Each structure stands twice: as C-alpha cells, then as structure tokens.
Image (cartoon, rainbow, N blue to C red; front, side):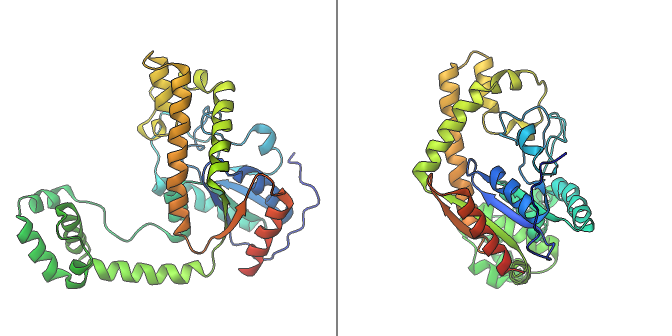
Length: 315
C-alpha cells in the first residue's frame, strides 16, 4: 500500500499538474511530495522510463519511491518496442481521465518536451511529410519553389528563410497538403495555445547550472555503480526509440570493447549535460510553467510551498 500521510487536497480543481524540468532536477521527489499533499497520482511523461527492465539507466523511480504514491506508465513497454509522442498521448489520456474519475489529481512528471507538448496542447496541426509530393517538389528549382510558396502563402514566405531550400520545400508542402496557408495554420495554432495555457498548471524545477552539472555527475557515477552496464547487456534487439536513451549507446560501445568503462561514464555525463541544456531551452519557452529556482541549500518544503502557490493561482 502507498505510504500516503495526511493527504489534504488543497484544490478542487482536478486538472493535471505538470512537474517539469531538466534531467536530475529532483522531479521524482517533488512529485511524490505533491501527490501526498494533493491526493494525487503520478503519471510518467519520460520517453524512456516507459520501458521495463531499464530502470537504472533511465533513472526511473525506485520501487521504494513508487510505493509512496500511485504511479502510472512506468515500465510498461518491452525495450524492443518503438514508441513516440502520439502513442504516448493515446496511453496517457485515458489514465488521466481515470484518475480524475476517482476524484484524484493527476500529477504529470517528466522531462520529455514533445510528450508533454502533445499532452498539454495536442499534436501539431501541421501535416506530416508526403514522400510522393516531396519527390515532385525536389524536381523544382529553388526559384520555382519560392514562387509557388509566395503565391500560396505570401505571409508565410516572408517568415521563411528563402535561402534554405529545405525550409521552403517544407513550407510549400504544408500549404499543399493542408490546402491552406501555412501561416494561417500557425496563427490559429498559436491563438488556440494561448487559450489552452490559461488553464494549464505546472512548475519548472530550475537549478543553477553548475550545481545541476554536479548533480548529473554524481547521478551518472551512481548509475554505473548501480548496475547500468549489466542491465543494458541483458537486453537484446533494443528498439531504435529505446536506443536513443542517454547512455545506452555508450554502454553498448563499452560492451563491444570499443571504449573503457571510465570513458563510457564520461560520455554519459557529457551527453546528459547537453540534454539538460536542450531541456532547459525547451521548457523556458513554455511561459505557462512557473519556474522555481533551486540550489543545493533549498529546503524541499520551500519548493513544495512555491509549487502549491503556483498551482493555487490557476484554480
């Protein structure tokens, strides 16, 4: 049974609460604390913690942590399965609805920006690429592509780098497939997002950069010491999606005697720091998230208080 101390749902609003942040920012601990405060249940929004048997390399919540509050969508897929944001959305939405139907608060936790974006704003309205159309467009000259784009979407053409053939081709492809100007699609999407974000509740755990790098270094060391290498070695035929998880390819290189264990650990650390930087950039653009600045001396109770204040404002 989950260890659920004095739960006080300080909000009657059952809209999801999003706990976001770069890797190693302490999202797991904060989400558990909030789940216990708000009678909530935690839903995974990490692209790789959905895979079973890779808990160490993906830094998934431990069994002890998961026992402290209900957790969903952790370790549900075989590592041989492919997965993407659209598939995640199909899995997450009914889980969230079920939590709400039991008068509980869904607490969405993760650092996978695209997965979270699909959940908060829905899939992009821009049509996916079409190989047949792309083949036809590839036969056109740069000037022909530009002329067609300027004809179908004059405004969009002014917003597109016309010196970049790939950008022009994609913009024209969108206009043709959607049967309307790309600029209109984007404007309508932005306006829709503005309305959506008025009702979104979430926090961004934002650490000072050098302190976060030290946390990443410490966690990387712990991951290796805790058995990430034999964990990865135990799996065969990993999916292309799964192989993208930070550390897996480096560990595979080590297992193939291409690099030493020390070099493997070093590469995982560098890759994680780079990923954290990309995550920070992504989340900083999500203006609906309330940032909470954290250092190594910030008490958890202060973080929880700030989080609850941010959530209450959106009620």
